[in-house]
Length: 309
Length: 237
Image (cartoon, rainbow over all chains, first blue to last red; front, side, top):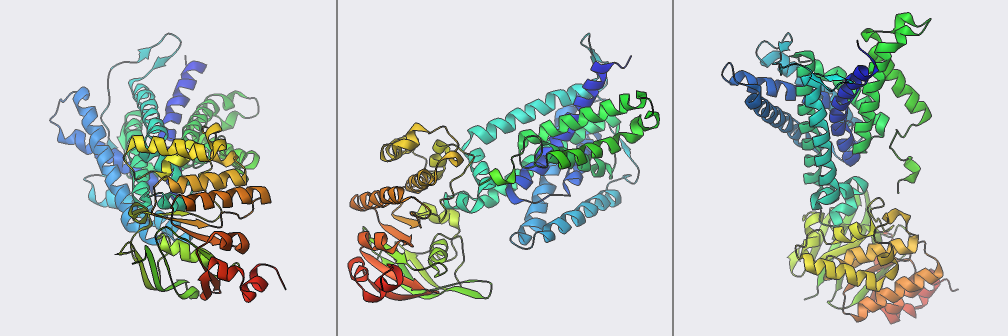
C-alpha cells in the first residue's frame, strides 16, 4: 500500500519543507557569512504566528479564508523577529570576530524558544494546529494528502518568485553583487545594510510558510520545533552548497527523499533490520551530510572555494 | 575652489596609522597621481575618499560638500567613482550586469543603454562577451570592465587604483592609452599607480607618498625628471 511513489511523494514534500527553510540559511550566509542558528526559531515563530491568526478568527471560518490570513500573520511575525535580530543582535557585531555573531545566534535561538515557552498562552506543551481537512488527491499512481499539496504548491511558487527577483530585478542584482563583493557593491551605490535586512526578511518569510506546512503535517506547533527542523534545513543548505539558493532547495529535496527511502527500505535489507523505521531517520540524514562533506565538501551545487574570485 | 580638497587627512587601522596627515587637491579636468611603494597609504587614501574607510581626522571636500561621515553608497551619487585595487569585478555576474551595476543609482534607462554601448565601443572585447560571466575575462579585460563600470555612474571624479597592476606590458599600454583618452575627453582623474613612469607622463600633478606622508609634490613633468624620484621609483641609480 505504501509503494515507492508514495514514499517519493512523502520524501519530496518533506524535502521541499527543508528546502524552504534552508533558503534562509543560505541567503544570509551568502551575504554576511553568518550561520544564523536562530533561523530555526524564526521558523517556529512563523508557525505560532499562523496559529495565532487562526485562533483570532471566529469558530467555523473556512480554510479558504483562514489560510491566507495564517500565512500573512505567520510571515509578518517571522519577518519582524528576523529583522529585529539582524538590527539589534547581529549588526552591532558586524566587522568583529566571526565567533561573536555565531555565539549570539545560539543565544538568540535559546532566548526565542524560552520567550515563546514563557509568554505564549499554553505553549509549555505542543499546541494543536488546524488541519486542512478534505481527502487525499488521487493521481492514480500516487495519492497526495492536502498537507503535501500545500507544500507542493508553496515551495515552487516561492522558488520561482525568488529566482525571478534575484535574476531579473535591480535589487536582486544588487543582492548578488553584495554577496560576491560587499565593499565593491557599496562603491556602485548599493546600500548593503538594506540588502542584508532583505536577505533576513526573505529567509524568514519562507521559513514561516514552511512552518505552516509542518504544522499541517504534524498537527501541532511547539516551542522546540525549530531545533530539529533548523538542523535539517542547515544540513540541506550545506548539502546543496551553502550560499546557493537553488542548492538549498536541491539539498532539501535530496535530504527529504533520502530520509523517506531510508525509513521505508533500510529495514528490509538483511542484517540491517534494526536500522529501519522512523526512529533512525535523523541518523541517516546526518550520515548523508557526513558523506557529502567527505566526498564533495562544497555541496551539490556549490563551487570550490578556489573558483571564487 | 578645487573639485576635491583633502586637508590633513589621517586614517588608521586600529592603532596603526596608515595615512598620517596628507593634503592635496584635484582641479576639475586634471589628472592627479599618487605614486609610491606598497604600503605608502595610497589605496587607503582612495578607500577613505570613497567612504569605505572612516578618517581619523582631517577634512575631505568634494564640490564644496564635506564627505566625512557620508556612507560609501551615497558618495557615488555625489559624483565620485572608485575603480578599486585588484579590479574587483563581480565574477559571477555577466559583463553587461557588471556595467548595469555601475549605473545602479541612475534612473535614465535610455542614457544607461547608451553608456553601455559606448563602453562596448571603447572596449570592443566587452561587447563581444557581454553575456559571459565577468570572472572568465583575462586580467586586462577585467581592468577594462572595472574602468567601464566606474564610468557608468557618469562621475565628475574618477579614482583609479592601480589599473596596470599585474598586466602584460601590451595590456598596460592599452589601459594607459585609455586613461589618456579619458583625460583628453575632459574626465577628472585621481590615479594611484606603482608604475610611476606611466602615471607621471600623463598626470598634470603628482604626489609621492611614503609611509603615510606626501613627501614630494609637483607637476607630472617635474616629478618625472626629479633626481630622487628617478632613483626611488623609476629604477635608475
